Length: 166
Length: 239
Image (cartoon, rainbow over all chains, first blue to last red; front, top):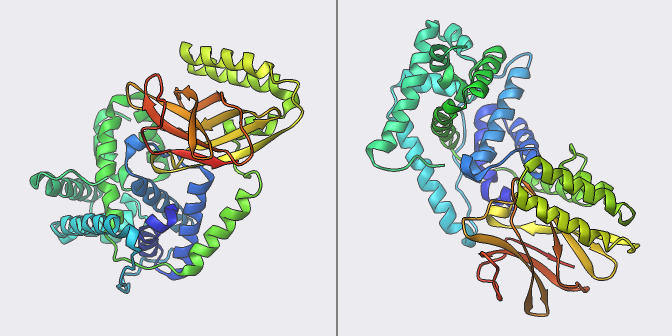
């Protein structure tokens, strides 16, 4: 089942966005039911199944964050947990962990001011205008940091001659 | 929106950071300039990596159970979602309405404007017409794996051991390959028809008569089909 393969990644993203267990679980359930009902439009040429599922979690998460009258700020307090793999999933899990490590390393190369803006946009659902107001920065600076941040992530993979994971 | 504005906003777009109005404008621009979609796809691929960076969290076992409960409940009744082509056909496809179903299939063929599909549909029309004296039918869903996990496929079993396969969202087959239907009686797979989805929908008659306890499977085979399956099944169902 897709949930067994991708549920943890979906929940991790959801928890990062929603900041608490119940809202994170509701979002994951909502996203997987959308997957089940086929309302999405997965196409192999547009990326992996995981990317597709995470994009559903992300998009619905942003919708929910933006619909909250009083927005909950993303909590950074998260507890590390030890992944538990089924033996048959061991290889795939190792592969996915390796990709996650690469992505974290790539994000680690970003200057903090770029990373902050990417995270506020991606995880917390702020628009570029809201970020500009929140950080008291010109809008052009926010856009510029978004551009440089994404470019730096791409450069990380290019410089190692590694394809960007999909 | 002009080119400069698109360049200015594309990163915020893939990060989901555009206000609604700007997002709509950018998407209208994209619709008018499809040649720029590839830039968005590349950026989107990079942005989507951010989803992998949060520390891992283990969801509770209750979440899995809760999702499975809803899935199982929905699996036991026709889904209440917006009806897809397949679902719409399924609703309408009673044996008494086979002529209507055939017409629906013909419409699909016209939409895709593919002569091959048209030929298949017309052929199917003829075969379906011969089944019109049947009085009962039932549906059996096929389970997809791998690239066909998202496919929705069902067998419509007709009186007289005949069946029609209907499927949508089937992955395209590689060049020089085709889908092949197998009816497995005991342990013996019998070649039972070929089809090649053009676009997202397909309808094909299962050529071999079906019996209770037969298994039906779909594999990808070289053009012209095989005498024995040469790849793992992508869709299966037990009758």
